[in-house]
Structure formats: C-alpha cells, structure tokens
Image (cartoon, rainbow over all chains, first blue to last red; front, side, top):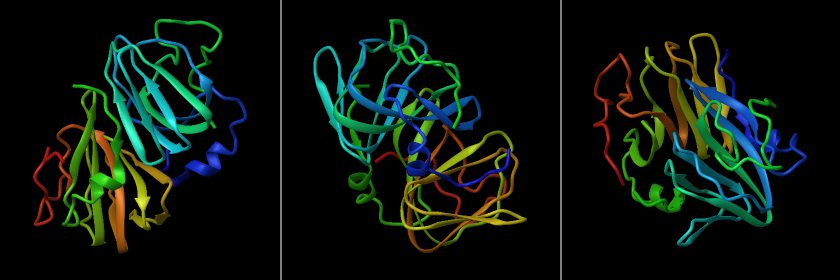
Length: 121
Length: 121
C-alpha cells in the first residue's frame, strides 16, 4: 500500500450516518476509523483492548460509571480495556478512533447500534 | 491508569526542542508521542513496524525516495515498515506520532538526532 496523505475532513464528508465507523487507514494490525457521534451510544466494554478516541470536531462526553470526561477538538482519551464506557454527544461530534483491527463498536453489549466492521472509505 | 482527557495543544506547550518526541499516552503496547519538527530529519526506515504521523499544526513534508507528500493540519500518513522516509518542515510543524512502544526515532540510521525513548510529559 502506498503511503499517501489522508485528509480527515475530506473523509468525514463521505460519512452520512452517526455511529457508523469507517476505516481510513491501517498501521500494522491497528485501524484508524472516523465516526460521527450524535446522541447517546450504549454502555459497553472491550475485554481485550484499550481504545483511543481523538476528537476532530465538536464535544465528546465520555461517560464512565463514576464520572464523565468532556473532550473538545484536539483532545484525546484512551479507554483502558475492560472499563465500561458510554460515549455521548449532545451535538454532532467527529472522532478518530484508533484500535486493533476487528474491534466491535458495541464491545460485549451488542444491540441495534452494532456496526458492520472493516468498512473502508 | 485512569482514563483522562489529554489536550494536545497543552502538551505541545511543554515541548521546547525540535526532534524530541514526548509520550503523552499509551494504548496497549502502542504509544502516542508529540513532536515538533523544524528543518530536515535524517533518512531512515523502521524494519519492523509501520509508523503514523498526524499533523496537528503547520506543514509536514514527508520525503520518500521517489516522491514527497505534503501534509497540513488535519492530515495523516502511515509510513509502511521498511520504507525509507525523511520528514522535513520548512517552518515549525507539530505532529502526533503513533507507533509501538520502543521505536527509535531515527530507525536504523542512528546519528545526532536519535532521541531518548519513552520520555513522558
């Protein structure tokens, strides 16, 4: 695969639906995914991996069972493996996810918001 | 480790010297490092890993042996393992590096710009 510049804003323009992660790049066995958030996701955890959220636009409210972290554009958070979390965005928020290939967005919780994996744009 | 929001601009304010990557977070056995670039680095490759550059501010010119990719803020590139590259920034440029823990900045080339590894801010 040739190494080419990837423009996050251009790629985000290709995404219509919230809660639908789209892969834009791979690094070893990790993937970079862009996702639009709006409203509240589902409580879940990933037993086998940490998960990184880097906010590109808007405000992400990362809810944990005991507290909440608000992140603006230019801020990131690494959710440790096994820690329950529930992302929320009162207004549309754009996030770059970084995690191993194959991670399911709803983790161990499943449900309607479970997205098809490995969809590239 | 508690999951807390990390502000890239705030962390960048703690870095004085160019070509001195500073770790700001870990995800599994990967690290997120901020680095300021100014001038030309050294030609090198990483035999065992891909390496991701996400531009936070300024313009990064990623030179390959056969071409160059110019990246602005909000753009990223994954340099594949084994591919020779030489970052260049005519004016100061701020980059978020994502790569496995322990990667040496000058790869297999060494030299004066080889930075101490695993320095956190």
